[in-house]
Length: 73
Image (cartoon, rainbow, N blue to C red; front, side, top):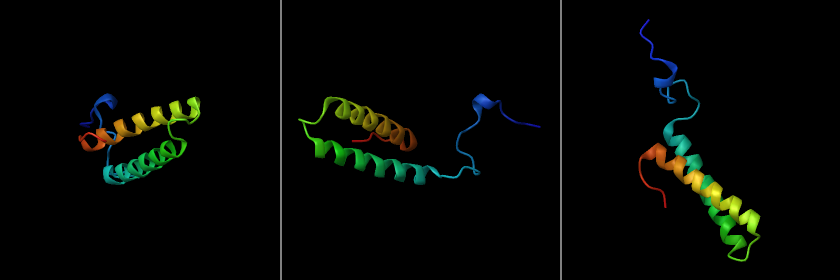
């Protein structure tokens, strides 16, 4: 059997539940929701929530960028 070692296998196989496009779309929706929440709390928003949302937004954008190889805004 000609199988690659676990470390060399792609995470994206045809048995995955989401395609890259679907995953990217969901990430974009979540990015928009986090952006909207950050806009709601504004500059005067609570520090811990703002910090958490900013960190989450950064992680979401990085994940979306990995799917498309294009920088996220």
